[in-house]
Amino acid sequence: MSEERDIQSLLADARAGNWQPVVLLVGSERFLADRAAKLLKKAVVGDGPTGFNDDLFHGAQVVASRVVSTAKTLPMMAKARYVLIRDAEDVPTAELDALAAYVAAPSPSTCLVLIAEKIDGRSKLSKAAKSAGAWIECEPLKGPLLERFVLGEAKRRGHTISPDAGQALLDALGNDLAAIDDAVERLSLYVGKGAPIDLAAVEASIARIRVDSIWTVVDAVAARRSAVALEAVASLLADREPPLRILAMVARQLRMVAKAKQALADGLRGPEMARFAGALPFKARDLEAAARKFDDDALRAAFRALSEADLALKGSKRPPEVVMEEVILALCAGRDLPLVSEWQFRV
Picture (tube, helix red, strand yellow):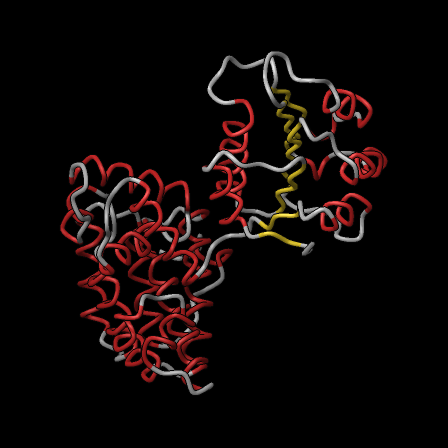
C-alpha cells in the first residue's frame, strides 16, 4: 500500500460513509484536519448522541494503554467506535511508540484518528501509519488545489462559481480555508438555491478588497507613478479597508509577480505561467505585464519595505495612513523603509 493518501480522497470517502481503522492527519492546515475528523466521526457513529461510542484524548495527557484499551472496546449498540487524539505532536515519544503497535494491527470495529501539526517521519508511529496507508498530509492549499477547493465548496452547495468570482474570493481571503468556507456559505444564501455565483455576488455580499485597486497599486509602483498608487490606497482606506489587509494583498500580488518572473524565465507562458504563480489562467496577461516591469532588485526592495511596514503597523505609534503613505513612496522609489526601531523617532 502507498505511504500517503490524498486528503481530498479521504474526505470523499468519509462523505460516502466509508472509513478505515486508523487515520493520522499531519500538517498545519487545521481546517482540513478538523473537517476530516468531523466527517469520519459522522461516517463511523452517525448523528447519534455523543459519549456512547466516541472518545477524545488530548496530546500531552495521552496514555497509550488507555487509548488502546478504549479502541479495542466493542461499540455499544452500534457497528463501530470512534476515537480521536488531538494535538498528537504533544504526545510523549514513549506513548507514541506504544501506539505504533496498535496502528500496525488495529481493531476493525474502531476508527482511530490522530491529528498532529507535525510528527517525526522516522518515528515508529509514522512508519506504522505510512505502512498502513493511514498517513494523510494536511498542508495549506496553493494554486490549482486552492482553486479546486473554491469550486468544490460551491459545488457541494449546488452552485457553479465563475472564474473571476473565485479569484475575487482568493484575492480577498488568501488561502484561509475556514474564511473561504464561510464566505461560500454566505454566498449560497445570497444567490439562492442552485443559482450561479458571479463576481457581482461576491462584491455585494463579501467584505473584500477591490482587486482592481490592488492591481492599480502594483502597476503604479512598477511604473514609479507614486501619485496614482497613493490615490488607489487612499480610496481603499476611505472604503474602510484595514491597512494591514491592504498591505497583505499588495504583498500577495507581488509574490505572484515574482513567481511569474521565474515562470517566464523557465519558458512558461499564458495559463501555465499563471498557475505556477498561483493565479487563475485569465490573470496571465496582467501577471506577465507586471513581471516584465519589475526587476529582481526592485522586488527585493519592495518585499523589505512591505515587511518593515507590516511591523510598523503592528508595533509603532505612527498613524496607519502615514505608514501606508511612507511604504507606497518607498515602493515607488525602489528604496527600503527605515527599521521599525527608527519609526518612533520620525515625526
